[in-house]
Length: 105
Image: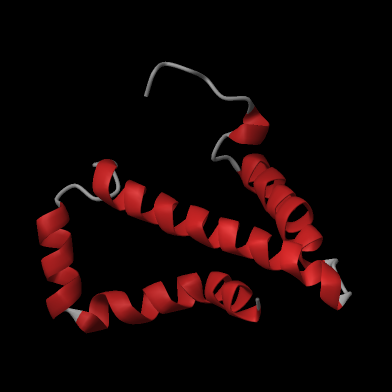
C-alpha cells in the first residue's frame, strides 16, 4: 500500500503464516489458558474480553474500510441477507475455532 516491503516472516507467505500461527498459539491462547486458580480468573476474563473487543473492532473496520476485501458494502450486505446458502456454511466453518475459543471463556 505504501511501498513498504515486509520481511518474509511477516508477509502472507507460507513461512509468515506459520510464524503468525505460532505467535497466536503461544503468545495469545497459551497465556489465556494458564490461570487455574479461581482468584486469577478475573485477569483471564479481562484478557478474553479485550481480545473479543479487538476481534469485533478488527472485523468491523475491515468490513467498512478495506475496499479490496469488500468492494461494495451495500451489495455485500444484500447478497448476505438474501443468499443464505452461499455465505452461511463456509462462514460458519471458518469462524468456528474463534467462536469456540470465545465461548470457552
